[in-house]
Length: 330
Image 1 (cartoon, helix red, strand yellow):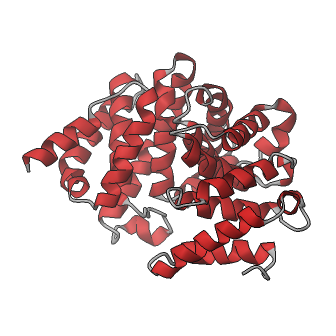
Image 2: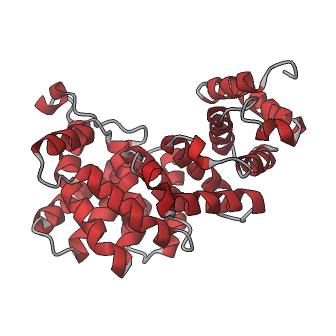
């Protein structure tokens, strides 16, 4: 492995993380992390030896195994190297991926280098001088970045305002027919998992006065799309499936839970025209999807528990209590 160049290491790590059913692959990723720790700091900071893409791949891979030995140390080293680079040389999706990966390491304890780089991303995105970069951010990139900052009450409010504004521009037409068609097509091609993550990324904003109005506007506008995609996830033979509508989720129980949690608050707090329709839909979701959520794997329940812990900074609701109580009774 010492003879492999740095680009090859990131490609190998990316391959191994996609085939984790093999136990040896986890060991191989740990070896790659050890290899990175043994590299001179100058190598990681050299853009010719280590491209932005390869740094992003390694950070993302290591974050998926954050509890394993050497993963945090390797990410700390990468974060220090990224801190010496100009983030404008990265593409928006890669910056969002970095924020998502770094966030997994700074929730319990704010390791200096990792948190500092997460803070640098936050500062870079909110700097008006980087508006051109900001305007290139896709809905997926916005979702990842906002979700990464959601557990951090000192970062979220500042980054949420411009992010929600960008999300509005990607989901709500300003009247031009060509723009509306482009937006509708973009949402149509966005899967249910991404929209579930977007909803939960917006969740803290609905408890903050200066953010809630725009957040409710986005959520109300997405409601019909989400409703349609949920129907498709339950019945893929639906006619919408033939039109190329994307409705997939790798953890459908978690996605349903996210949607119920967020739209229950929308129904409770919003004064939009769709309030009654949303209330009815949430009730139907609880009734029809509860068992599917309760019967989901321990993996999904762990994700739900982690989600609730991360969002403890926001006003709490009774979503988890509702399901755990029913789960206990059954």
